[in-house]
Image (cartoon, each protein chain N blue to C red):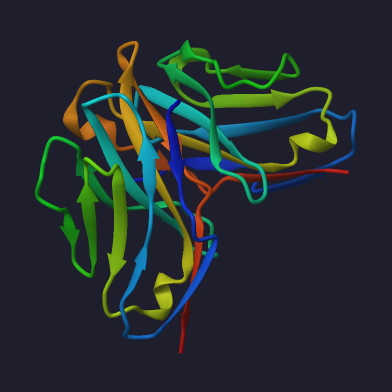
Amino acid sequence: EAGVTQFPSHSVIEKGQTVTLRCDPISGHDNLYWYRRVMGKEIKFLLHFVKESKQDESGMPNNRFLAERTGGTYSTLKVQPAELEDSGVYFCASSLKSGQRSGNTIYFGEGSWLTVV
Amino acid sequence: AQTVTQSQPEMSVQEAETVTLSCTYDTSESNYYLFWYKQPPSRQMILVIRQEAYKQQNATENRFSVNFQKAAKSFSLKISDSQLGDTAMYFCAFSLKSSGTYKYIFGTGTRLKVLA
């Protein structure tokens, strides 16, 4: 079974440019999460989809970040325009339906490393 | 506030020896889950072990075990017979149910290096 896959693995862009990160969750996982880790800091929650709906987007830093999950399958996270402080690793994770015991474990992708210069 | 604290940014251990990574957390919830994830240099984050807060028995997974002290809100990870492949960043996390879904709170991580 394929795990959570993310693309691109690395991205270097200039301040002011746009970047779109993509995440393909594990097949059948309704829950999809985006997290971010700035170097040396904790992994911070950005938002949570249940199928195509945004369940919780309280962690999104500002309106330069836009996440979508059309059709409830893959998700994209767009940063526009990118700023220097957006640099970090963006992790995507997925889990089965909330409320089920086994669904409480989330499975991570390898992360997308974003560097804004 | 819901927080996780990992007070050891970096640690090293000799191959075949035992190492303990510390983790404390703060929550007012009574039902939650605790996790240790590892992220090796290859970057895939992998679940190492999980513990359900209502279970008093410490979870064990092969060479990995936890010391869960609920009253102290402590959740340390012990790695026995350390192997070179254990070199990784280790993240402690807990999850709790919020508005019908699970939210995960992570620590800053501990970088563990296993020395040959």
